[in-house]
Amino acid sequence: MLPAGLRNELEGKELLDFGLGITPDKFEFHETHCNAPSSLVLGYALAVATSGKAGHILMAGFDGYPEGDLRNQEVEAMFATFADSGAIEHLTSVTPTSYKGLPVRSIYGF
Image (cartoon, rainbow, N blue to C red; front, side):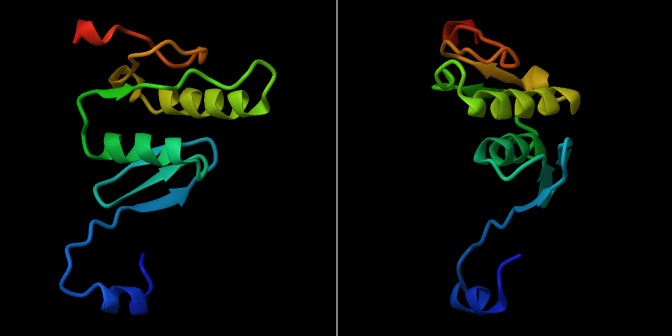
């Protein structure tokens, strides 16, 4: 997915190029790329970890935005879409969170 000029400049270096496509309301996981519902880094990170067959995705610091902030809805929608993909059982927050779609578990429970 890198432009030819940039690929030429990086010749001889190991590249780990994992592509991202945007597919509204859907996650898709593949070996060399993924599709996420938006370009939020959260969606890309979840898709990369799931595509890489991560056994668990432990999240910390996702406490949420202040009440009434519309960004909370965007993140909740991302978690709901991730849950619809069937991969939510691998996702756990190890710190308190206000997101209803993010399961919470003590770090000592692993």
